[in-house]
Length: 162
Image (tube, rainbow, N blue to C red; front, side, top):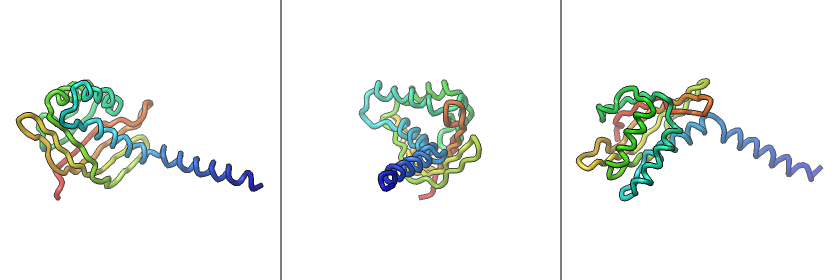
């Protein structure tokens, strides 16, 4: 009987971990972090290294994504995935650096096949002549679950109070 106790306990722990790991909340948290890591480009990194992020970005975006931001007027609206990939490719060539660092996650809400991640992040986008983003931002990411997993369909951000 004691011989079965240890494997049974391990099986229960593994099942609990798998349930937690694959829960929609944890998946959305990982997808959000992955998105921010993809958008981050350190100063001095090569173009080919930066361009690899386009492939990661493709796996995170819905066919159409709505962006709402007060800081970059041209970035407002609904865009097709290919347009965002082209814009990201341009950013890879132009930016001195970009950094999107998650400060905290305020909430993760899942309802059926949709989810929302509300968070605060520190963002810097440094172009050769100006910084369109530099500071703390309150951000809401809206995700939709499809046949191929969770994909970003909307992002809303505004400057956050310090």
